[in-house]
Length: 238
Image 1 (cartoon, rainbow, N blue to C red):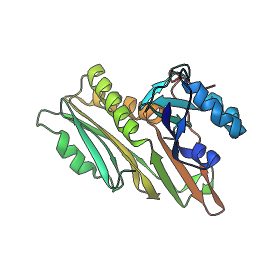
Image 2 (tube, one colour):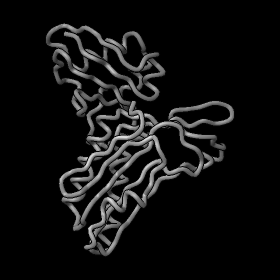
Image 3 (cartoon, one colour):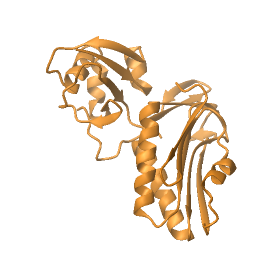
């Protein structure tokens, strides 16, 4: 069987490639795929407890069997190409997007407002100028884009169903970002302020643990992929 295998973040650096098509025998599992690369790149096996795998853009357990034409992606802990941007409007007027442009929160708010709201809460994550006292020059963000958009949509719809709110929007930047720029925004409208605040907080917390987007931080003396942490319910390969 031939499947497409993708690597992201630090894993891409370790194996020296972003994606490729590979042949595996009938009955092979996602773990079979992982072990074939771990045999060539032992550091992958050392990182296994923090790596998750996706099959056709959905999280999957290593024991899941692969099929002809599958897309298999190995994902390092989240930290948090589309030529310009992609937006998706979901039922109920919710919006989710990935963009390489500056995030325009006023325009995003205009997409959500209906006139019935009593509150709009917006969280913006911005690029700071240091990490642990070490001056930061800039950040690079990359993502497993199709899965990232689908995961934001799922999170947003679940939050909208769990809180007494109106509409939810999430958008994340990709590409090079400078100090002070907004990297991610979560916006919630609601009749009252408290559920809007609570839903926005839940949204950014879940986004940071589940959406497959990674950042590389650049300093004057080098660059590193920022280590994050997966949600405890996501199955690991090791």
